[in-house]
Length: 193
Image 1 (tube, rainbow, N blue to C red):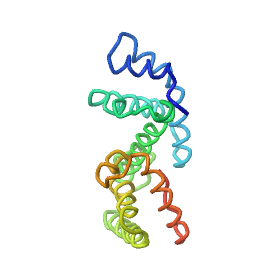
Image 2: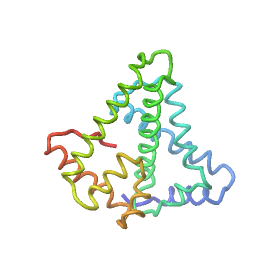
Image 3: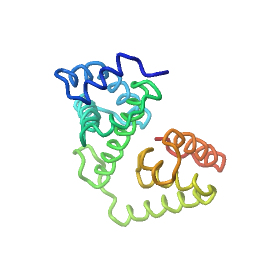
Image 4: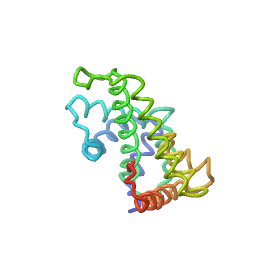
C-alpha cells in the first residue's frame, strides 16, 4: 500500500514542527500503537497492566521524536506510514519487553517476580543459550548468519544491519524469515521479533 497524501502531509507538518502537527499525528496513530503494544505483548506471553500499556505507548512516541525525529526522517514513503509505524512500534515494544524481563530476572522488577535462583544458575542458563544459538548459527552461512546474529543477539535494527552488511533495509526481514525457517527445520523454534 502506498503512502497516502493525508499521511504525507501529516508527516511533513511534523518534521517541519508546524503547530498542532504532533498532536494530530498522535491522534491519528494512537490506536495503531495501542494495537501493536497489545498484540506484541500477547505474542510474547506478557501480561500488561493499563499503566504498562500506557508506558509502552509513550515509549513508542518518545522514540519517534528522539534525535530530531530520526526514525520519521528515515521513512522513505515506499509503503504506507501505518505499515512503517507498525514495524517500528513492534521493534520498540519487543525491546522494552525484553528489557523488563531482563530486569525482572535480575531482581529489579516488581514484587511479583520470582526469587532469584542465584548468579551461578544465570551463568549456566546464559552459557547453554549461547551454545544453542551458536549451534544454530553454524547451520547458516555468510550474510544470513551475520544478519541473525546482529538482530537476535546484538539487538540491532533493520537499518543498522542494512548499513553494516550492505543490503537494502527492506531485505533484512526476508533474510531473517528464511533463516528462521532453516532453524525450524533444524529442530528449533527461534523467537520471532
